[in-house]
Amino acid sequence: MSKEIVEKDILFEIKNLKKYFPVKGGVLQRTVGHVKAVDDVSFTIYKGETLGIVGESGSGKSTLGRTILRLLDPTDGEIIYNNEDISGLRQGKLRPYRKDMQMVFQDPYASLNPRMSVGELIEEPMIVQNTLSKPDRKKMVVDLLEKVGLGPEARGKYPHEFSGGQRQRIGIARSLSTRPKFIIGDEPVSALDVSVQSQVLNLMEDLQDEFDLTYLFIAHDLSVVKHISDRVGVMYLGRLAEIAPKDSLYDKPLHPYTQALIAAVPSTDVLNVREKTPLKGDLPSPSNPPTGCAFHTRCPKAHDRCKVERPELTHMGEEHYVACHLYTEPEPVVKVE
Image 1: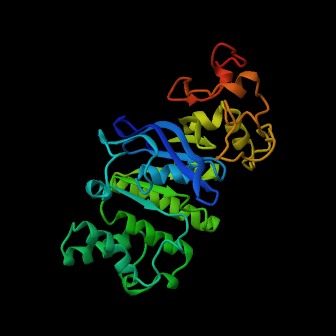
Image 2: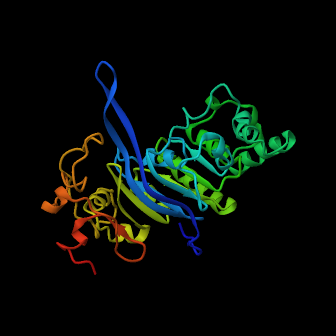
Image 3: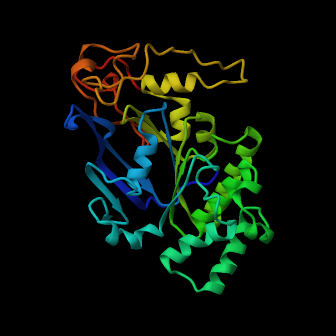
């Protein structure tokens, strides 16, 4: 993205956020453990930026997004939106905030009700929020369909009459119907053809400029995230391993996990091929994560301290933070320029 975030006004401040799911067992179905989907995550989201979140499947990306929107209740931690702590609000108290926060889902086929017409799908959030009169709602539906590249004739059609890319455009139009300030894209292009992916990404960028939106963009494709993001956060097993401006992260990744992810991205530049660092083993179970650094069981640079002590996010300059013992005292292993 070419634009820069000039004013560093904070829209969201996430503090020590946790989301654990109970594991039931035995005849009485008692809680015998927890799946730590999001485990003590902290970061900020600035107004007008696109913050990308990447990581392997099972790293907690989607759960993080749904918890921030309060589609899931947090186990612990704070979600501060516009200086208001919304983490403990009940559903009735959350309603005024709902219109400001929307989501574009991964599957454009399952996320649209097949029994509702396109016009009804886009109009429904406005009816729930009671923001406009009926004539104004009808006009808004037409305006939004035109904004996303679909004509007014799409109002009376049903989702099955559209392609995957067109359905995702309908989903984007629906997310804009309440004039939100913040949108989470939960892998919004992963189910689309490559040629359609670029069209949807460009559309989201254009709409961001026009509607002054802030995005949290969740994906596993690092090339897609690099295209649309201002900053990128890397998650591993429910924890934040690294977060930095995209150029800093891609040009000089610090965490061994980030280095392995970026090295695995296919490149056509034969003169600048990154050294690949294959990861050992599979992603551990989030119900029984390793002690210390969660990545130490697969890290080629792990040492004894990594097995017993959990690293905290360390500031490495220029909004670049990394959670790795390689860059902290008392055992500095790698010197950072």
